[in-house]
Length: 266
Image (cartoon, rainbow, N blue to C red):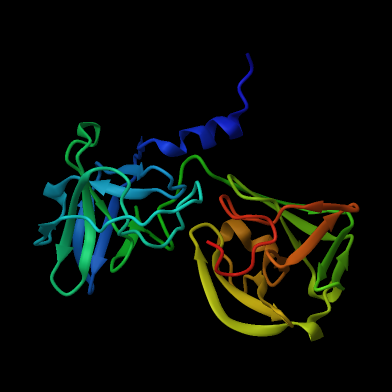
């Protein structure tokens, strides 16, 4: 029987997963190198779609104290949000650093060889000699950016706010297809800048735009990373927006988020 690879990937979300990486991984704290390893694993805790580095304790130069992990509240979504990294869904010990609280977690699973899963903050991270933002790069994800002449229409609160036949299609593994539109095809006078910013390890730092009754309904990348240079300053919509491609509504919801959910749903 044929295997649907996307569904197979989601079926594995309930498991503790790991992948080896050939990269040299370094972490800096207050300008000092506190980790330098060539023996890291990428670890995905159950219900997590983003990996974290798990490193041999001998390569970690920090004085850490052991604690009981924080309890995980009852959550109904199949996917845990990317924040709240102090929530752990496997047995293990929470590791704290004076002045910073929990910065790591040591799962009990013997397949990880006693490695410590480090939180992203408060560290500065490098893969080889390249700085990394947001989270580790996932070897099983990629971005495709394609010009498209499909007709894209965006509606917010019953008003057509954008319409274009020269969109850019961005496909990112595990996420809905995003349609980025030229500003000339967007009613920019209906959008106002937001103070919200988010970080993507592959695309960079996003700035957000709000419409009346629809906060943070759109975003753009003013200074994208090289994988996403083709969408620089283009505008994409989600959540409170209805996006139609060739007359058919498409999903803009994140994994585990109900379609049409407003900000704060995950």
